[in-house]
Each structure stands twice: as C-alpha cells, then as structure tokens.
Image (cartoon, rainbow, N blue to C red):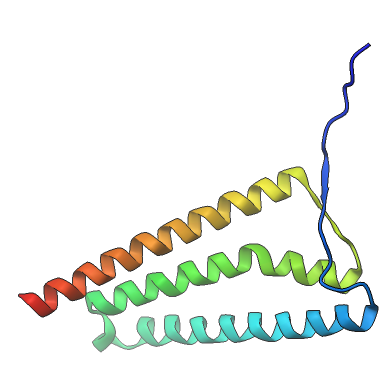
Length: 126
C-alpha cells in the first residue's frame, strides 16, 4: 500500500495572532500599496501625457514604473486579503503563479536597471 497524498495548499505564517494587530498590518500594507500605486501611476501618466518626456531615459522610467506595479501587485493583495479575512492558506497553483510572476517582474526590473545604468554611462562618457 502506497501513500498517495498530495499537497493542495500551503499554510502561511501570520504577522500577528490578534485581530487588532492584523487590522494594523492591513492598514499599513494598504497604505504602502496605495502609495506605490499612486506614485507609479503619476509617473506613468506624466510620461504618457507630456510629449517632451518621450526620450529614452523617460521611456526606461515608464517601463520601470510598470514593472514596479506588476511586482507589488503580485504579492501584496494576497497578503492584504489574508490579514483582513483571517485566512492563512494559499493554493499550490496560486503560490507557483505568484512565484513565477514575482521572479519575472524582478528579473525584468534588474535587467532594465542594468540597461539604464549602461545608458547613463554612455551618455556621460560619450
């Protein structure tokens, strides 16, 4: 007889066990998330609307803002939902999807930062 159990969910550790601290966690993370959304949204809007900002440096900043929005939107909403509703689980496929998206966004962000630094190096030295 073999063991045929499979993993369908992961249990996450909570930041706090008391309801008041979970609400504090929710409020702090929601504030930081909204600030990131607002800041990156303003950068994207300013670059998209002003034709004088359609230069390579601002193109890189626009893409960096988009990647930052993607990376922060990968993990924070699930954390907010878990702290608000008191749940501590995530499905296996949800965890894998979060990991893959977060890895993609962070890799693309590091690549873009490397390209931006090389662009500034060339602009200064040439």
